[in-house]
Picture 1 (tube, rainbow, N blue to C red):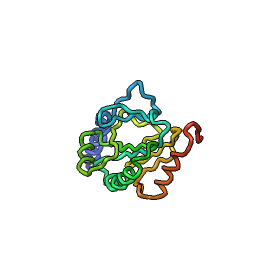
Picture 2 (cartoon, helix red, strand yellow):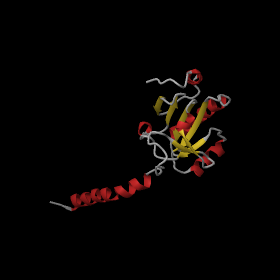
Picture 3 (cartoon, helix red, strand yellow):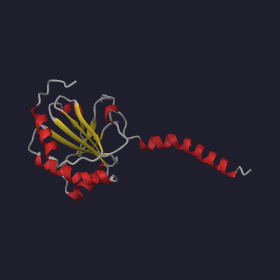
Picture 4 (cartoon, one colour):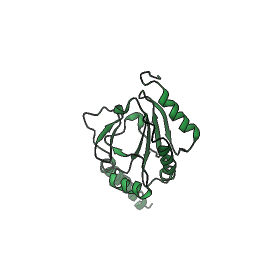
Length: 180
């Protein structure tokens, strides 16, 4: 009986498990700031300013999580840009393109090259558990009262008249009531 292959396989499996802690450390997005609640989303704008989702209460918030290596993300960004441009005058709607590369400079260059004007953010802390996903693109829409209305994993047609109308309708909702 040839033991060479089972021993090699056992060695590879052991090596993989031994490397797991270092792989997990490399992929850990950001450290949690003690002033940020684990249920609040913390973003960093292009000027390095920390912005919390809780500070946007009273506004409809459209969050799009994307990365430069994600082809579906890249494919949907032009329609997101068109929606953002068409609603830029709406003071009660906030857009945030959240780069998941963990490389703000790379994302900024990507946006500049394509002349996107959507506000670009990076994560300022780990994603809250109710927003976590293993897939992007992901779009989350938050109502004025702070409640998550939509969490869509996968591409969205941001040029849909229904989406635009629904966002405008959300701006008319009272922000002091809870939908739960």
